[in-house]
Length: 296
Image (cartoon, rainbow, N blue to C red; front, side):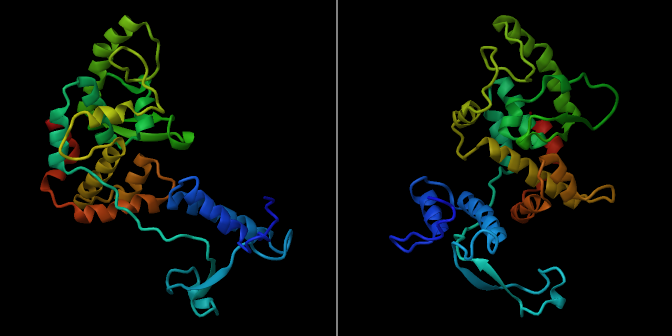
């Protein structure tokens, strides 16, 4: 259909409504993903109305807006009302799932493969994503020297290819340095593979960044609770935020720090972990980084 065909003559159905139903029904897209598409389409048609066409391919409904949520709300004459498209589907926000400190201990204790344990620790202690883990750069691993709490390193193979800084605790850096010079060196010698990625598979090959092998390795542990690569990221964020809020200093703002470490483009995304912190009552999480080290 042409984008200028505002409605279907056969069924009198709005064009964008038909697109929405197709996405969810035939293509099986999630409600959140479909709404993201719809917001882009609404912006396009809102810009084009009066320029390229006279009407919109959807209806508008009046919604109430609480005062205080609008910029310069006191100057508005609309009575707290604004108009929004009737296209969007209702969503129910799901809380991100994370591991308790006890579950972290059980997870690390269940991993017999030392390389897999290092991979899990790197996720738990830096909050990197699965793809970022599998493409983690070899060159940032260095021999720890001096007396410092962590090493700041840059990673660029990230979501959106945006470079960001992460902090690797000294104990973890020591173990990664040992892995590079011992286990990884042996694997590379046996396979002959030349790779600039930190982690290699058991047969000395690069991990496939688009594959599901890492998730399957976690699932094969047969733990009494669910563990996924992204849950490791949520676990880092939740426990770190709780610890920083309880030991707040004037040096930095916890949410801003966490936003930078996780690579969120909006602080709103990071703020979702505040809700999780309220559910976290395990005292073992206060000194999160040190305790993951101790467990490992």
